[in-house]
Image (tube, rainbow, N blue to C red; front, side):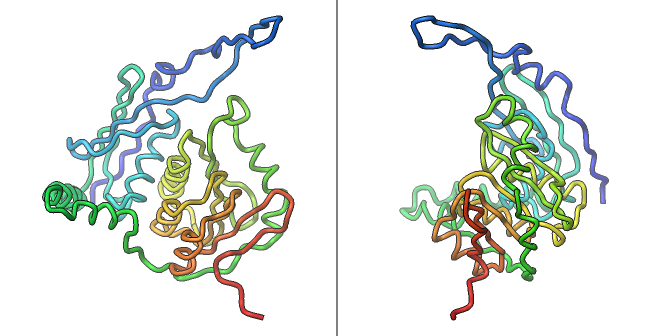
Length: 278
Protein backbone atom coordinates (compact mmCIF):
# COMPACT_ATOMS: atom_id res chain seq x y z
CA UNK A 1 0.00 0.00 0.00
CA UNK A 2 1.45 3.42 -0.91
CA UNK A 3 2.23 5.49 2.14
CA UNK A 4 0.09 8.48 3.03
CA UNK A 5 1.86 11.75 2.34
CA UNK A 6 0.71 14.54 4.63
CA UNK A 7 1.92 17.93 3.43
CA UNK A 8 1.34 21.14 5.35
CA UNK A 9 -0.69 23.79 3.62
CA UNK A 10 1.42 26.30 1.69
CA UNK A 11 2.45 29.18 3.89
CA UNK A 12 0.72 31.71 1.64
CA UNK A 13 -2.70 30.02 1.62
CA UNK A 14 -4.03 32.06 4.55
CA UNK A 15 -1.92 35.12 3.75
CA UNK A 16 -3.56 35.31 0.35
CA UNK A 17 -7.03 35.79 1.83
CA UNK A 18 -6.64 37.26 5.33
CA UNK A 19 -5.83 40.97 5.90
CA UNK A 20 -3.27 41.24 8.66
CA UNK A 21 -4.97 44.12 10.50
CA UNK A 22 -8.64 43.16 10.10
CA UNK A 23 -11.38 45.13 8.34
CA UNK A 24 -12.37 48.75 8.86
CA UNK A 25 -15.91 49.59 9.97
CA UNK A 26 -17.93 52.67 10.92
CA UNK A 27 -20.58 52.63 13.63
CA UNK A 28 -24.05 53.68 12.56
CA UNK A 29 -24.41 56.44 15.14
CA UNK A 30 -24.37 60.21 15.13
CA UNK A 31 -20.71 60.06 16.20
CA UNK A 32 -19.76 57.72 13.31
CA UNK A 33 -16.90 56.17 15.27
CA UNK A 34 -14.61 53.90 13.26
CA UNK A 35 -12.47 50.91 14.09
CA UNK A 36 -11.12 47.64 12.79
CA UNK A 37 -12.31 44.09 13.46
CA UNK A 38 -11.20 40.58 12.57
CA UNK A 39 -13.74 38.71 10.46
CA UNK A 40 -14.12 35.01 9.72
CA UNK A 41 -12.13 33.89 6.69
CA UNK A 42 -13.80 32.23 3.70
CA UNK A 43 -12.38 30.79 0.49
CA UNK A 44 -13.55 28.58 -2.35
CA UNK A 45 -11.91 25.14 -2.24
CA UNK A 46 -11.99 23.18 -5.50
CA UNK A 47 -11.39 19.47 -4.94
CA UNK A 48 -10.25 17.13 -7.72
CA UNK A 49 -9.54 13.40 -7.39
CA UNK A 50 -6.86 12.03 -9.71
CA UNK A 51 -7.44 15.05 -11.94
CA UNK A 52 -11.25 14.68 -11.99
CA UNK A 53 -13.08 17.71 -10.56
CA UNK A 54 -15.56 16.68 -7.89
CA UNK A 55 -16.72 19.62 -5.78
CA UNK A 56 -16.27 23.28 -4.94
CA UNK A 57 -16.88 24.13 -1.29
CA UNK A 58 -16.83 27.40 0.63
CA UNK A 59 -14.61 26.77 3.66
CA UNK A 60 -12.49 28.47 6.27
CA UNK A 61 -8.87 28.27 5.04
CA UNK A 62 -7.43 26.30 7.96
CA UNK A 63 -6.93 22.57 8.57
CA UNK A 64 -7.68 21.88 4.93
CA UNK A 65 -5.91 18.51 4.85
CA UNK A 66 -8.16 17.39 7.70
CA UNK A 67 -11.18 18.68 5.78
CA UNK A 68 -10.33 16.84 2.56
CA UNK A 69 -9.86 13.57 4.46
CA UNK A 70 -13.08 14.00 6.44
CA UNK A 71 -15.12 15.20 3.45
CA UNK A 72 -13.93 12.29 1.31
CA UNK A 73 -14.91 9.79 3.99
CA UNK A 74 -18.14 11.49 5.07
CA UNK A 75 -19.40 11.83 1.50
CA UNK A 76 -18.72 8.16 0.82
CA UNK A 77 -16.10 8.95 -1.83
CA UNK A 78 -13.53 6.70 -0.11
CA UNK A 79 -14.03 3.76 2.23
CA UNK A 80 -10.95 4.56 4.30
CA UNK A 81 -8.49 7.44 4.55
CA UNK A 82 -5.85 4.90 3.54
CA UNK A 83 -7.32 5.28 0.01
CA UNK A 84 -5.95 8.86 0.02
CA UNK A 85 -2.28 8.90 -0.98
CA UNK A 86 -1.50 12.58 -1.41
CA UNK A 87 -3.06 16.05 -1.16
CA UNK A 88 -1.58 19.13 -2.82
CA UNK A 89 -3.00 22.57 -2.00
CA UNK A 90 -2.43 25.45 -4.38
CA UNK A 91 -3.73 28.99 -3.72
CA UNK A 92 -5.32 30.94 -6.60
CA UNK A 93 -6.24 34.37 -5.30
CA UNK A 94 -9.37 33.95 -3.17
CA UNK A 95 -9.59 30.25 -4.05
CA UNK A 96 -7.58 27.13 -3.29
CA UNK A 97 -7.23 24.03 -5.45
CA UNK A 98 -6.90 20.65 -3.74
CA UNK A 99 -5.43 17.94 -5.95
CA UNK A 100 -6.10 14.59 -4.29
CA UNK A 101 -4.47 11.35 -5.31
CA UNK A 102 -6.54 8.30 -4.39
CA UNK A 103 -6.30 4.56 -4.91
CA UNK A 104 -7.46 2.95 -8.14
CA UNK A 105 -10.33 1.30 -6.25
CA UNK A 106 -11.59 4.61 -4.84
CA UNK A 107 -11.24 6.38 -8.18
CA UNK A 108 -13.16 3.64 -10.01
CA UNK A 109 -15.99 3.88 -7.47
CA UNK A 110 -16.03 7.66 -7.78
CA UNK A 111 -16.29 7.49 -11.57
CA UNK A 112 -19.09 4.92 -11.31
CA UNK A 113 -21.09 7.27 -9.10
CA UNK A 114 -20.65 10.13 -11.56
CA UNK A 115 -21.60 7.91 -14.50
CA UNK A 116 -24.81 6.78 -12.81
CA UNK A 117 -25.84 10.35 -12.08
CA UNK A 118 -25.08 11.54 -15.60
CA UNK A 119 -26.88 8.59 -17.20
CA UNK A 120 -30.24 9.23 -15.58
CA UNK A 121 -30.76 12.97 -15.86
CA UNK A 122 -33.31 12.64 -18.68
CA UNK A 123 -35.21 9.54 -17.61
CA UNK A 124 -37.88 11.16 -15.47
CA UNK A 125 -36.36 9.60 -12.33
CA UNK A 126 -33.47 12.01 -12.02
CA UNK A 127 -34.16 12.53 -8.33
CA UNK A 128 -33.62 8.89 -7.38
CA UNK A 129 -29.85 9.15 -7.08
CA UNK A 130 -30.17 12.44 -5.19
CA UNK A 131 -32.55 10.73 -2.76
CA UNK A 132 -30.11 7.84 -2.37
CA UNK A 133 -27.47 10.37 -1.38
CA UNK A 134 -29.80 12.18 1.02
CA UNK A 135 -31.04 8.93 2.61
CA UNK A 136 -28.15 6.51 2.07
CA UNK A 137 -27.66 3.00 3.34
CA UNK A 138 -25.35 3.24 6.35
CA UNK A 139 -23.59 0.61 8.46
CA UNK A 140 -24.90 -0.21 11.91
CA UNK A 141 -22.63 0.91 14.71
CA UNK A 142 -21.82 -1.69 17.38
CA UNK A 143 -23.28 0.52 20.07
CA UNK A 144 -21.45 2.03 23.02
CA UNK A 145 -22.05 3.13 26.59
CA UNK A 146 -23.14 6.70 27.14
CA UNK A 147 -20.43 9.08 28.35
CA UNK A 148 -20.41 9.93 32.06
CA UNK A 149 -22.58 12.92 32.91
CA UNK A 150 -19.51 14.55 34.49
CA UNK A 151 -17.86 14.76 31.06
CA UNK A 152 -20.69 17.05 29.93
CA UNK A 153 -20.46 19.30 32.97
CA UNK A 154 -19.52 22.88 32.10
CA UNK A 155 -18.90 21.71 28.54
CA UNK A 156 -20.35 24.82 26.91
CA UNK A 157 -17.88 27.04 28.77
CA UNK A 158 -14.99 24.74 27.88
CA UNK A 159 -16.03 24.79 24.22
CA UNK A 160 -16.08 28.59 24.23
CA UNK A 161 -12.52 28.57 25.55
CA UNK A 162 -11.39 26.11 22.88
CA UNK A 163 -12.82 28.08 19.93
CA UNK A 164 -9.92 30.33 19.02
CA UNK A 165 -11.33 31.54 15.70
CA UNK A 166 -14.76 32.22 17.17
CA UNK A 167 -13.23 34.28 19.98
CA UNK A 168 -11.38 36.39 17.43
CA UNK A 169 -14.00 36.85 14.74
CA UNK A 170 -17.20 34.89 15.45
CA UNK A 171 -19.33 33.55 12.57
CA UNK A 172 -17.93 29.99 12.70
CA UNK A 173 -19.15 26.58 13.82
CA UNK A 174 -17.05 24.10 15.76
CA UNK A 175 -16.75 20.33 16.04
CA UNK A 176 -14.79 18.91 18.96
CA UNK A 177 -13.65 15.56 20.31
CA UNK A 178 -13.82 14.89 24.04
CA UNK A 179 -11.59 11.97 25.06
CA UNK A 180 -12.19 9.19 27.56
CA UNK A 181 -10.99 11.41 30.43
CA UNK A 182 -13.54 14.10 29.59
CA UNK A 183 -10.93 16.50 28.18
CA UNK A 184 -11.33 18.37 24.88
CA UNK A 185 -8.70 16.73 22.69
CA UNK A 186 -9.39 18.37 19.33
CA UNK A 187 -11.29 21.41 18.09
CA UNK A 188 -11.92 22.25 14.44
CA UNK A 189 -13.74 25.40 13.29
CA UNK A 190 -15.27 26.43 9.99
CA UNK A 191 -17.90 28.71 8.48
CA UNK A 192 -19.78 25.55 7.47
CA UNK A 193 -21.18 23.21 10.11
CA UNK A 194 -20.64 20.20 7.83
CA UNK A 195 -17.11 21.38 7.13
CA UNK A 196 -16.29 21.63 10.82
CA UNK A 197 -17.30 18.00 11.41
CA UNK A 198 -15.43 16.89 8.28
CA UNK A 199 -12.29 18.59 9.61
CA UNK A 200 -12.70 16.90 12.98
CA UNK A 201 -13.22 13.45 11.44
CA UNK A 202 -10.21 13.97 9.18
CA UNK A 203 -8.04 14.94 12.15
CA UNK A 204 -9.25 11.97 14.21
CA UNK A 205 -8.54 9.50 11.41
CA UNK A 206 -5.17 10.97 10.51
CA UNK A 207 -4.06 10.88 14.16
CA UNK A 208 -5.45 7.34 14.56
CA UNK A 209 -7.25 8.25 17.78
CA UNK A 210 -9.52 5.68 19.42
CA UNK A 211 -13.02 6.98 18.76
CA UNK A 212 -14.62 4.45 21.13
CA UNK A 213 -13.16 6.20 24.17
CA UNK A 214 -14.78 9.58 23.63
CA UNK A 215 -17.46 11.54 21.84
CA UNK A 216 -17.86 14.29 19.27
CA UNK A 217 -19.59 17.61 19.88
CA UNK A 218 -21.09 19.98 17.30
CA UNK A 219 -22.03 23.55 18.14
CA UNK A 220 -24.45 23.83 15.23
CA UNK A 221 -27.92 22.55 14.42
CA UNK A 222 -27.84 18.74 14.38
CA UNK A 223 -29.19 17.77 10.97
CA UNK A 224 -29.38 14.40 9.24
CA UNK A 225 -26.19 14.98 7.24
CA UNK A 226 -24.19 15.21 10.46
CA UNK A 227 -25.61 11.84 11.53
CA UNK A 228 -24.44 10.37 8.20
CA UNK A 229 -20.92 11.68 8.75
CA UNK A 230 -20.77 10.49 12.36
CA UNK A 231 -21.93 6.96 11.49
CA UNK A 232 -19.57 6.65 8.52
CA UNK A 233 -16.69 7.80 10.71
CA UNK A 234 -17.55 5.26 13.40
CA UNK A 235 -18.16 7.86 16.11
CA UNK A 236 -20.10 6.19 18.93
CA UNK A 237 -21.64 9.34 20.42
CA UNK A 238 -22.62 12.74 19.03
CA UNK A 239 -23.45 15.64 21.34
CA UNK A 240 -25.20 18.69 19.92
CA UNK A 241 -25.60 22.12 21.49
CA UNK A 242 -28.73 22.61 19.38
CA UNK A 243 -31.81 20.40 19.46
CA UNK A 244 -31.92 17.60 16.85
CA UNK A 245 -34.67 17.12 14.31
CA UNK A 246 -37.13 14.22 14.54
CA UNK A 247 -35.58 12.47 11.53
CA UNK A 248 -32.13 12.87 13.05
CA UNK A 249 -33.25 11.10 16.22
CA UNK A 250 -34.89 8.32 14.19
CA UNK A 251 -31.72 7.65 12.18
CA UNK A 252 -29.48 7.81 15.24
CA UNK A 253 -31.62 5.19 16.97
CA UNK A 254 -31.74 2.97 13.90
CA UNK A 255 -27.93 3.02 13.54
CA UNK A 256 -26.97 2.70 17.24
CA UNK A 257 -25.50 6.19 17.45
CA UNK A 258 -25.76 7.79 20.88
CA UNK A 259 -27.31 11.24 20.38
CA UNK A 260 -27.33 13.78 23.20
CA UNK A 261 -28.62 17.35 23.25
CA UNK A 262 -26.93 19.74 25.67
CA UNK A 263 -29.39 22.57 26.41
CA UNK A 264 -28.29 25.90 27.83
CA UNK A 265 -29.76 25.54 31.30
CA UNK A 266 -31.16 22.02 31.58
CA UNK A 267 -29.64 18.60 32.10
CA UNK A 268 -28.31 16.73 29.02
CA UNK A 269 -31.10 15.02 27.08
CA UNK A 270 -30.39 11.56 25.66
CA UNK A 271 -32.47 11.02 22.50
CA UNK A 272 -30.67 7.91 21.32
CA UNK A 273 -30.77 5.22 22.50
CA UNK A 274 -34.49 5.57 23.14
CA UNK A 275 -35.39 5.74 26.83
CA UNK A 276 -36.92 2.62 28.32
CA UNK A 277 -40.68 2.78 28.83
CA UNK A 278 -41.64 3.25 32.45
